[in-house]
Length: 443
Image 1 (cartoon, rainbow, N blue to C red):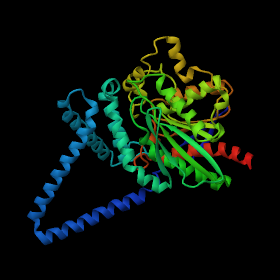
Image 2 (image 1 turned 180 degrees about the vertical axis):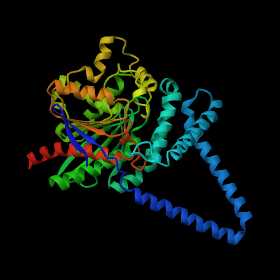
Image 3 (image 1 turned 90 degrees about the vertical axis):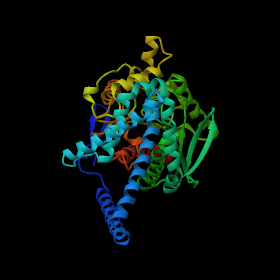
Image 4 (image 1 turned 45 degrees about the vertical axis):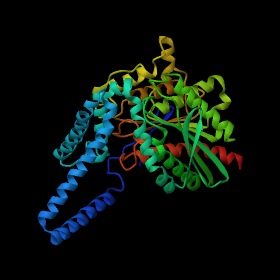
């Protein structure tokens, strides 16, 4: 269970789990079963066709599998290099990084780097860190667009099955020159709640479809919590909103695109602001917070019911710090690079200060759920903005800390990220509490 402490007047929930995540036994059983089945099959083939024939066939299959794997790594490596001839080298380096991670895991006695981690999660984190550390500037300044399509492809691959699992209906819409995706509740219930999610990616990469699983988990968990805890029958629709990205479209274009989609939802979905929750991870979380600050100052009647901010970047003047966060997926140089492209048109130092939410007034905003991993790049600035909220007398923020987790774990598949479901659930509990007050008041 998470332990709740306090940070002045701002609640902080600390996830201090050190035990392995649930489902470990099931995964071990499945792995063992696969090994046994393959062993029996191999023995049968040897008896039928002889050892030499089977050995040759297995060798051919392994060679074919290796070739396909290498091609997949080459496809991923396109965004990491400037020259076509450097792609195979980058692909080999990625594979060597995975190999070294597995070797390090074995030398630790087959134990993960942290109790909350798994080998799969460690490989994922190490590979992302390696990519951004070695090739971050090339990605940020030249090849960001090449890292958008793989995220979209992943989302397209799982969209149908994931929506079937969570009983949602995908609906693509084209607004403001971009594709966006609704994950709609097929049933019309007594109440309706809309969640608008803005994806992360350093303001430059990724795609709304990357967060299909996050969105569907949000849909299911919110419905379940509202039903079981508050006895409310609620339709939850989640919009995966798109926005134009840097370096082609630097600030303020991405922020404005996010705001425009919110206005679109209010106008075309016949939903009031107090029935809308903003959700965002990393860059998307920053823009959710920034747009709330913008509305508070200009059109407070449009403020949403609340915000779920997963690993928001809030201070663009913070640089360096790799020695404090060696296991985060984002090295300092890469963060500095994507922030440089995002702020390319901001030349006035005073204006640059205003872009960072930490430099603004935090009073008068909707309730905020702010989540960070304790190993992540933005943890320090996150604690500073929490401290500032406390100093300004803010009482409607809840801060959730995921112990020994790096940046933005909720955007990874739940099969990869051990704390993804828990992190999403914490956010949904916060959102459900806000929604229940509104819906009960209407009964």
